[in-house]
Length: 305
Image 1 (cartoon, rainbow, N blue to C red):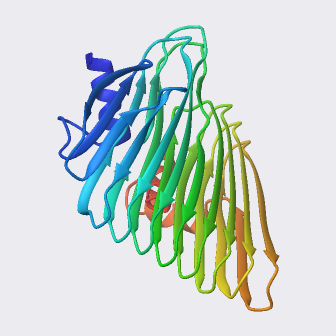
Image 2 (image 1 turned 45 degrees about the vertical axis):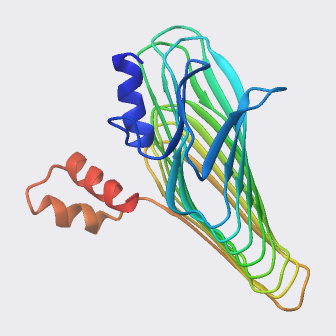
C-alpha cells in the first residue's frame, strides 16, 4: 500500500500497523492483505466480490478488521460481505471505507453487509466513512446492512461519517428474536453540497427484544440530510429512536421517525429535534477568548463526540 492508502486506513480503521487478530484489507478493488485465526476464518466468495467471515461459537475478546480504501479516480465497486457470529461469542468488528479522489471522475464503493448473530452472542461493530482529495469527481459511499439476531444476542453499531463524503445512501434493516438487543449510534456531519440519507428499519419480533437507534448530526453550508427510522413492534418489546441535529448556514434536514405497533405489549418511543447552535453557548465560549468560529467548532465537536 502507498502512503495515501496507509493514511486513509488510519482514518477509517485507526490502523497504524498490521492489526492483531483477523483482518482483510481491500485497496482499489484488490486484496491488500488477509489473515484468519484459529477462531475466525475469512474466505473469498466465488460468485460475487466479497468475503465470508465465520466466527466460531464461544470466541471471546477477538477482533476482525475489514477496511476498504480507494485512491483511484473513476473506480466503482460493489462488495458483499457476510458475517456468521457463533453462539456465546464476544467480538469486535471494525469496517469502514475511505476514498481519496483527486481526479475528475466519480469514485464509489457500495458495501453490502449481512450479520447472522447467534444465540447469546455479543458484537460491537464500528463503521467509519471518510473522503478527501481536491478533484472534481465525487466520493460516493452507499452501505447496506442487514442484521439477523437470535435469542439473547446483543449488537452495538457505531456509524460515523464526519468529513469528505459527497453522497451517501445508507440502508440498515434488523430483525430481533426474543431477548435480543440492538443499539445504533450514528454520528454524521455534512458540508458543502453533500447529501446523506440514513434509513433504519428494525423489527422487534420476540418477547423482550429491545432496540435503541440514535442519530446525532450537523448539516453545514448547502448540504442535505435525511434520517428515516422505523421501529416495528411485533411482540412484547421496547423500541426507541431519536434524531438530534444541528442545522447551520443553508443546510437542510428532514427527520422521519416512525413507529409501528402490532402488539398491545409493544412500547415504542420516537424523538426528533432540529435547531441551531444556541447564542448563549457561543457567548459563553467567546468570553473565554475563543472567536465565534472557534466556539462553533468546540460546540460541534462536543455534540458529535
